[in-house]
Length: 302
Image (cartoon, rainbow, N blue to C red):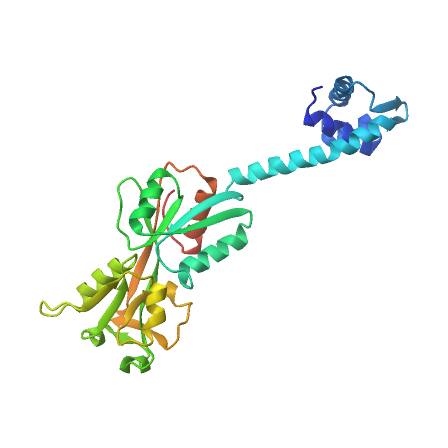
């Protein structure tokens, strides 16, 4: 027994309209096409679905039972087609996004929240790991896009700066700088810093060395084999401080305060860039890039 979804659709339309003529007009096809396909369907299942008369058609007893079973089949086929079309347009399917920074606040969190509301049928899997791991997974196709601190190009990947965020110092609430509205780089020359050895700790360390080295004397920086969350959790009871990006400030820790850092030109900023492969054909990635491009008024091709 073989038949087509199209033939089921024609039979359901004929039953709903009580006429081959009216069903054909509703489907915008020739009546002969509809009647010929319904006849093929009846031959395939070995029984008549309709009783035909000059007044139109009515379902046979067996035909009514058959059509009751056919309706969910057609509905499922329509749903599957709609789902595949949505996936092909990037409105459904999946997207794997890598990052190496906190998402408790900041633009990455806000962007993904807005994207989720606009594309509820796209399943987004976020992967947090070090830069080297994410770039390796980007190379093998395990992730679709990586959004990382900085704007360092990598061979084989597209790289585009997406946005900038403020840098802040996190310090004990008892520290003398905790009363300031803003903290300047020059206020941090003689302080001790505790940074995570994992990303983005090394990049922040390099930035501190560049900003705070005076007459060959480098700042006191300890790289801890702990997460940034653990460092922030113990910071309130220590004499050290740490540097965080704006994306980390959504989480609060006991006896710890965040203060914006300013330099000679105003607030200290760090950039975030997206990395992806040009040969990635995932429609959801293209739609995400279009979304980010519009959200931040950027100019780039993808």
